[in-house]
Image 1 (tube, helix red, strand yellow):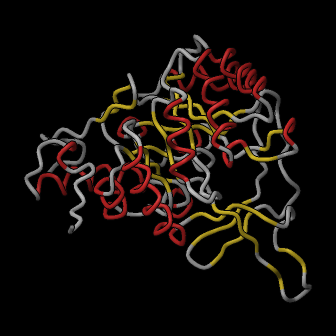
Image 2 (cartoon, rainbow, N blue to C red):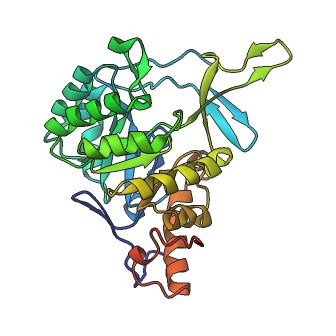
Length: 311
């Protein structure tokens, strides 16, 4: 099959947004899109999700901010970003011209911040959907992460949905006792889709000086090491909600992506693998099309949630 040509239907719907295929790039691993324009064909992707945007610019955490681990990496970037106004004035023109939808990841430390970021993004030409990072601390609730409490997660979702004019995806944290409770709460609050998982909390120590290897001491673990956890959580959430589930966590091959879809994911996001192979997302698009051709699957819907579980 010629690259980029296929007779199979790989399109999926995330709320009112239709993607040509289910492969997205995860927030925080793909910059603002332009950084990768010479490394792969952006218009081959289902969507790109830009680096998380806060109300005001953030400098991030002190270095070191990235540490390689067994089968993955720890990061403590600290949500460094240009802020919503610079995103609109500096990034929007380029992103508007891309051949694939752009999803903007947003973050805040209060409901008011989430509301204001969403308000400022209304009418911005490049924004096809919003992904809400609820792993942030609620400064008015003692620093407890929004994503660890069902009522707080629902409150953020309702706040964003009240203002947003595009589909709203809520990105779930795995650092909870039961992720399905959070998923059900945000679905009931109006989320158009959920994406999971965000990073697991971890740390690493330098035995040479007995100091943490990250300047922030702890960070987020991503990469192949978390795939089994992510796959399990995607399967459980897909059983619990009726809205689309977007799978994230350790996907670095076509086979990985297909596993998530068989488990119930409507779409997938490629994260840490972008650092290893910047063209991996496009390779996975081709791989999914080839698999469907080989297996005589004409529509991706036949694959999504097709896991066979013996009674």
